[in-house]
Image 1 (cartoon, helix red, strand yellow):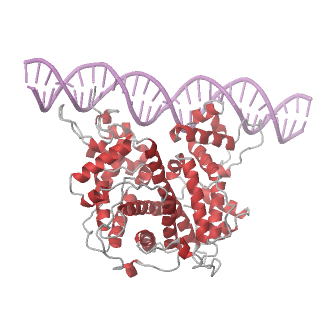
Image 2 (cartoon, rainbow over the protein chains, first blue to last red):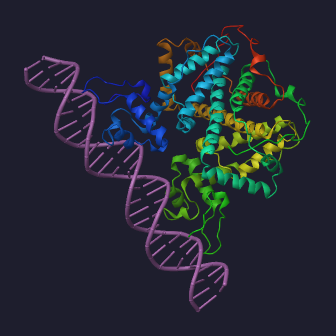
Image 3 (cartoon, chains in turn purple, cyan, orange, green):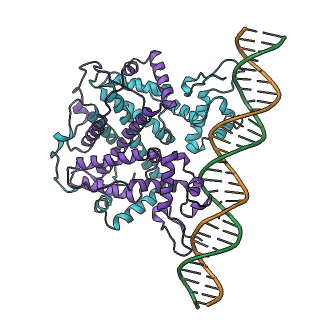
Length: 260
Length: 260
DNA sequence: CCTTTTCTGCGAACGGCGTATGCAGTATCT
DNA sequence: AGATACTGCATACGCCGTTCGCAGAAAAGG
């Protein structure tokens, strides 16, 4: 006849109060996991590894965490705490959301494992709630339904993660060409040259851009367009769109391509 | 002194020719894995389980596949083959891309595990290449760089997966309320009511929409806005945006919210 | 104060997983 | 025909997430 023991870790108090003083707390455990993930990647974050990194027994983490997934939730929420909201609240809503997106991207770049960790789950830890609150505050004066606002924020985060993932891959490629990327380029060119894929072939003929410094503005430009497209009251339906921007030049300036 | 044995499964021929006739082929193995995933979810797809489902030895799949990841790649590419390109090629580029997005969504809905499987990896199997080719073909006459086209396609896919994930969650919630969702709602309302989160609190006061039938048009409406925002030559920069849609009504019609 | 209760860290153990390897047999090539 | 290079199969290794029972320590009850 044990009590239900809430399903979410955020609803469970960290200490029940009765027993002896625990050696660690959730923050220290999350920090240890983050350090391990930053160094050796996400798969290195095992219960045993984090435990011995803390100098504890192999299975002693289960006194603080019910499952490995909860450990990852703690880690994700802790790095979300790196976001600062100091510069917010006094600008256009678009500026505020872009500032949030920039900070989110910085967190992703500082902890590359976060891209994989948040790919499936979206834990609503305290820091994530704070983030959501500030994002909603930035959109407070906008005349759209709360539903649309939440959806726009979700899509914004998805786009940020997508763009950042591409950037991370590009950075990694700059140091050492990963095996899979080489194999993928091999395969793509081989398939494209084998025929039956004319557009892919023409898209693959080109060079990567020499100047990387424009990627910063590209990030903001895409986000701006997506956000204005989602949250602007002007209704640009598909019907009014038809026949506007039609064929003008057939693939004028092929610059560069790569597989994401 | 063995040959390098290409790193990608798509570069490796299915049969080397010399030995006896194999009992299965990649398609049959992928189909078995898909059947298992459709029934019991992605974690049920283990090397042993798929092997015994085929009536083979526990580790016999390694004659066809180098690793479990490659098995997942086979499965992903096979379900990508369910996409039909018959209705394409004779409309506006936006219509073509929306048709592709709709089919992509159908595949996600038919195989819910695909959302998790493609969350981290983006394998470029033959069917994925075909998809990319058709998407590029739809954008052939557009006057933007190939880089922008590829990025737009990537972002489109990300948005489709995000929207579909939300829809899958919503459908599952209709049947049986999952534990985590209940716990999450519990936590969110608790936090919002505890103060310090006024915007979240106001966003949480409301009801879910009674009419679900508008979700179809919502899907297309969001995609349309994102795509036109990304691919329209008209340059709507952040600077020209400032001060346009400013405060008019403070959160007029709160409809509904939920955590994604 | 002492007892009782409830927590703590710890180590061993279980079942399952991905994967490597050695074996005996069979289809193809020279 | 003989050599070669593959086939299916079973066993085994190491690691993982997780469970459980133990001895001890801090708080609650009298």
